[in-house]
Picture (cartoon, one colour):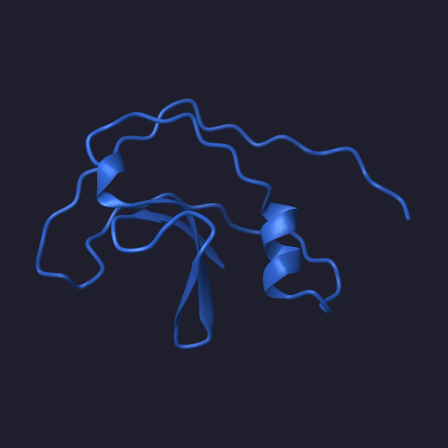
Length: 91
């Protein structure tokens, strides 16, 4: 799965390219040119996309910026990227 920031969809929406899900963390033109502190819960997103799947492990974390075949340019800056483990929640 990918977590995306874009101007065509709104936060919380999903788009699929083939069968590959893309979760929109922040969207809309009003966010262009602004800095944000962003926090996403990967487990919540995973469980929403695949509610019946077995637990998964994060194997790759990548950051990139592209214009998604729009013939436009995009620029993004990333700073102070952190991952933190949430405490286990037992049923």
